[in-house]
Amino acid sequence: MAERRNGVPMPPTEKTITSADWDSLEISGERHHRVLFQDVDMTELIDRGSSFEECQFRNVRFNVSEHDDAQFLNCAFSRCSFFDATFRGCKLTGSGFDGCTFGLLKVEGGDWSYVGLPGADLRGSSFVGVRLREADLSGARLERAELRRADLSGAWLRGADLSKCDLRGSDLSTFDPHEATLTGAVIDPFQATVVAGALGFDVRS
Image 1 (tube, helix red, strand yellow):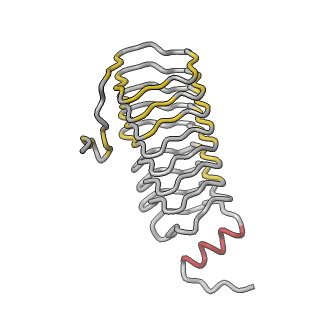
Image 2 (tube, one colour):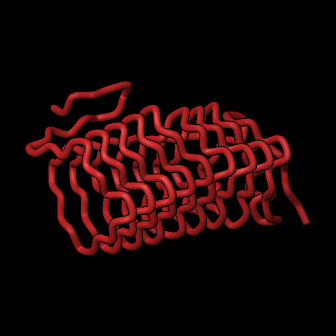
Image 3 (cartoon, helix red, strand yellow):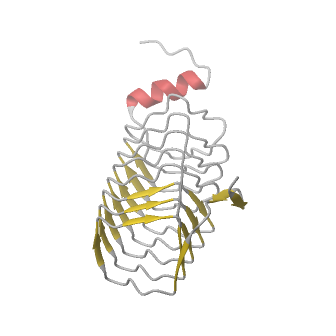
């Protein structure tokens, strides 16, 4: 069984890359399996189609990096920074985040199902057209964030703060509005009917 740190599974690693400078590198189609990346600078990295499977990232700087069609499968991110990072069409299924910072993170499309982001500060971040099925967003701070056209079916949102969060077009079919803070959240008319039904209202035309 994998070691756990603050609830995040730590996959076993077979290779270590320490204190490397990947700043402004361009990588394409690379494959990494069970690698520990420790204190690596990936600022402004351009990543096209690379795969990281069961890897650990500790104190890695992803600031202003761009990832297109990349995969981070069952990875663990500890104390990493993602300021202004962009992920387009990426797959992060089963990955977990502990003690990371996410200012201005942008996620466009892709599959983030089963991702662990409990308590994450995602204020001002953007998730558009992303699959977040059964993602753990419990206690997450999503004030003024964008969660548009996202598949949130089965997502854990207990204790999350969605104040002024733009949720338009997202799947709220399994969402319990009693469990989260929703002050000023933006939803569309169809979602309003779904939320009203979850609150026990008898919606009629």
